[in-house]
Length: 96
Image 1 (cartoon, rainbow, N blue to C red):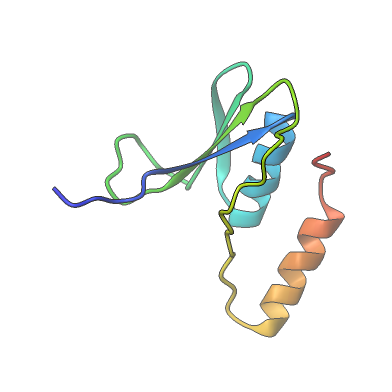
Image 2: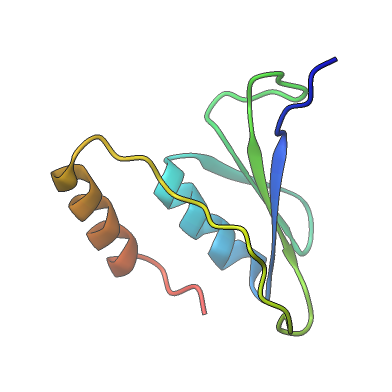
C-alpha cells in the first residue's frame, strides 16, 4: 500500500474562525465532530475518500510556544487570480 496524505491538522485558539478561513480559501465546507474541532472538507466528500485531503482544526487552550516548519501555498491560475484571492481573504474573517 502506498503512503498518501490524508489530513492536515492545525492547532488554534479558535478552531471555528481558523476553520472558516481555510474553508473560504479553499472553497470547501466545514463540519464538526464535536466541540473544539472544525473539519474543513472538499464539497461532496464522504469518508473514507481515497482521493481527498482534509483539514482539521483543533482548539488548544494556550498559544503554541514552538514555531512549526510547515508552509502551505494556495495554487492560483494567474497573477490576477492570486491578487483577488489574497484581497478576499484579507478582507474576510478575523482569525485572531
